[in-house]
Length: 333
Image 1: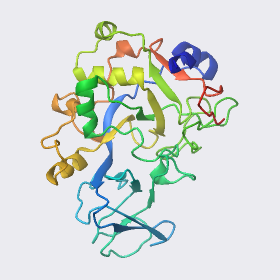
Image 2 (image 1 turned 60 degrees about the horizontal axis):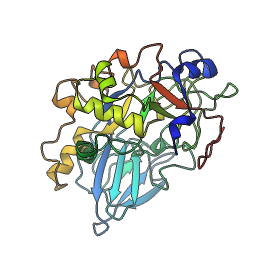
Image 3 (image 1 turned 30 degrees about the vertical axis):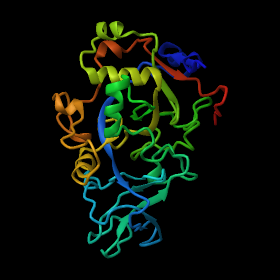
């Protein structure tokens, strides 16, 4: 089943969905660590996370998050997007978490012996039924499409990362113009509006949930002639060709660092120090070779690919026509 045959190239996107909507889909393809990942076992103690929105301790969940976990401490905004993965396949996500003994981010409540969060829930099919911070602007839960450290080992063998990549985009549809919904399957929605992280930002454009592909007919020789020089660039390119990238958030409110969403270096380091095999001394290759100077918004680097691969008038990228139905795919207009 050739999913690429159902996608429009950039010129078609410009014609159908607004000038620039096809030619700018890849400007923000710089990897950036914005999501924490912590691993637990079904035999571990399940600790409580209290949710403090809309009121202090409004609700709670129980999950295998270690009481002493320190990998959360990223992002000066306090977002601290976190995925807790259990060895039995269950997963939870949390937004804005604070550790035991710290003043909670929300609710004006006192610090206590528990984890707190603005929002947290157990993942069901990696989507949420209602918009929550932990579901992102698209309703796709944190962790969905996120590059994690073990993906690097997969890429070393297979030449790609083995799954669709989630991205912060800069041209998401606001859903106010006919034919331009703010969210399509598998996104449960796109949050309309012009301000705040995760918001859809244009009256026309690519909805959250839409999948974008790099032309799968490009060979490695073609990619080399277009300026790719680093092994990890080829891994990203192969992933974009085979699996695609999916619009999950918008970079409004996040500066210029719209990006491929990756696990933070802080959570990778904590996992390594606490026995997650094979991660000791791990560095993302774009940090190790100096292409990026830091993680998340602190980096001055904001593109994985050379300009020759993403020119303003290009035919290297394709995007699903979200107003059509495809075999096995439900399109929500």
